[in-house]
Image (cartoon, rainbow, N blue to C red):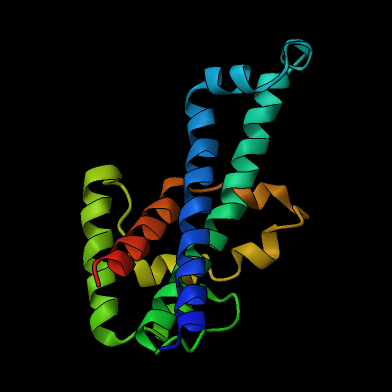
Amino acid sequence: MTTQQDELHRLRHGQALALQYAAQILISSQRDPQIIRRALPGAEVAATNAVSTTALGCEYAARFLLPFVVELALKALVAKHRNDQGAWGHRLSKLFDELPAHVQVELERDFEQIRRTGFAVETRTVRRVLTDHDNDFPEWRYLDDPSKLVGGSIYTLQFVASAVLNVYNSR
């Protein structure tokens, strides 16, 4: 593994981590409108529906950011296990399938632990979640049909991203 490849490998991981933190702030702003009130300038926060409109924008942003975070994290994990031979494409399930079987098992186990502690209602496996969100980033990023973004829990992909990054960090 060359230094340049190793740096690119770590760059993908760092990008995924930074964007995951940003997504967490977007998600948190929906639970705590004070975050939005502190972030918007006084004149804007006073505008009619400013807080609710901003909360909706944060939800949209988190919903199309999280599949990208998962994509970056999976690409970093794949590269880590293939001597920095990167993976291409946006299909999340295909990226998962490129991982060695033992890493897939570890990822499922980590997701299960996170899921149990954070969101017991979710019953899908990582593989099923990735299949269900296979094309979210390419399809959603232009908001052609924003109603598709609002369904389902926003936490599931956050938990998947956390599991992928945990597995990446454990090796």
